Image (cartoon, rainbow, N blue to C red; front, side, top):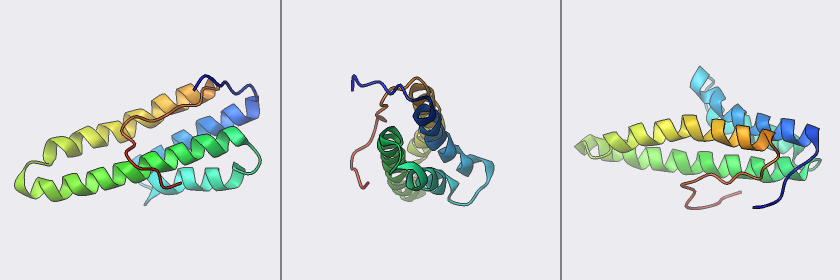
Length: 118
């Protein structure tokens, strides 16, 4: 998208919605999903940018969960292990990239999203 958000508060919350997904990496149970969901649900009615970026972050996390679940099952026959590593790295790196783009006001779209729920 070529749209740019100029509202400083919206950009900060956009950054926050993406970085909150990393809370799962520091040991918060289901933080990878609850973080973006909480921020999105708090601000989606007030800031259109956060509504957009929050739904994008939630959809990415749902997709990663499904991909990792399938890879985990496939790892029982050793096929899924490289995919588990790939998706783990993606779930760490992509939210950081998205947060940087959101802080600039860019409407970021995650790669690898195959289906949208929110």
